[in-house]
Length: 239
Image 1 (cartoon, helix red, strand yellow):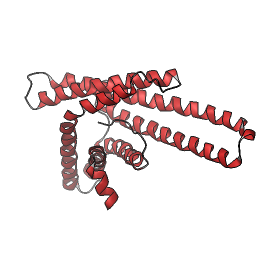
Image 2 (image 1 turned 180 degrees about the vertical axis):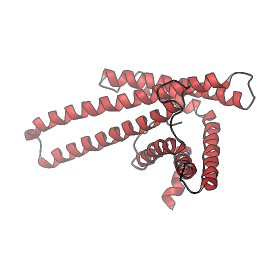
Image 3 (image 1 turned 120 degrees about the horizontal axis):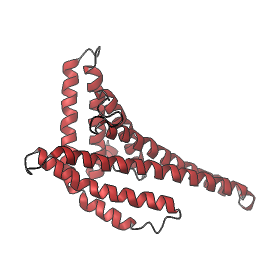
Image 4 (image 1 turned 45 degrees about the vertical axis):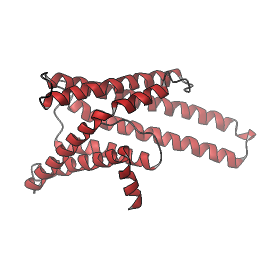
């Protein structure tokens, strides 16, 4: 109970928990309202809860621009990254994330009649930037996994220079990092599946997902995000 309370005390922790409840409600609601679900009224209520939680998260993201800017500024041109491809993917992803927020803010303001503009094109643009960020995040993690495998093979070839204990610690460190990056790939791809679903009709599988599948993809990504937070890992940014 104390660990849950500690998570709820932080903005990121609360957002991840709300996101998990949002998508799991969408998953259950979609299953219950599907043909043969058996409880359509309960399903509709759960979908309403999911929509309200999603609206809540969108409103709170109005204040995320500064934190994203500080993160991007701190990363800079990726001087600490040894691999140029990882650096390029990270920088491009940061740019996409930074542009995402103002586009979503404009779409949100248009939906509520604050600005007299067409919200559809801004939602499409913000969703496109999110999709780009997710694709870049998956590619970055895949590249890191490949580099880690190469480094692990190199360290095994030099094992005779180290003690058995240090070799085991080194292998564990590589395995933990590879597990983190693998989970990040799964999370990015799950969110990317939903991002494409929310694209305009005619783009790949846009609009073809049933509610329960949208909920499933989001729940998978959200649970991974909670796990990453519990392990102290850096997760992906997740609208």
